[in-house]
Image (cartoon, rainbow, N blue to C red):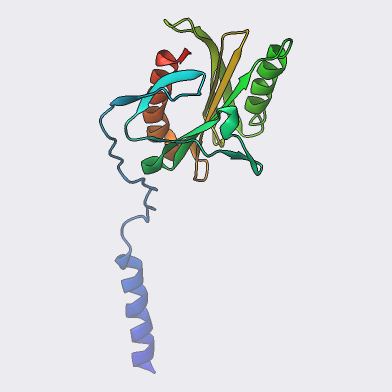
Length: 195
């Protein structure tokens, strides 16, 4: 019995002195991303009322379905970034008389649908060197889309785009990819022209 108490005493002493450093959990880490060099190619297809430059590491899909309805005849496209699981969904509308206000209101409505999860929403009006006017939206926070924009000539054409990722929204982990693709969206807008 004496050996039993001796064993318990030694085990207790060893336990007290064995843990001499505080336990610190490892922080979450994200894998390092490597991005390709920025190079662009033209999108200037017959039948489309617009042209622009987009990255060579992206591809354009003309087969667009919106709730089961084909939008190919409406000049809608998707700009896919397969290496980043991202897509810029592009819609186009020929403006009917008195319709511009409705299209702009709809663009703001799409942005404002993210209010519940957004930290901030910034909109910036701009006019490019090509004379294209529009608004660019930056939506901060863990939202489905951080960037949306629309371009218009105010009389005939309305072009809208929104960047989405096929991933759970996490602003921190998507920040490098968002920053990388933001430069491509800026280039698209600056090279955009109506035909």
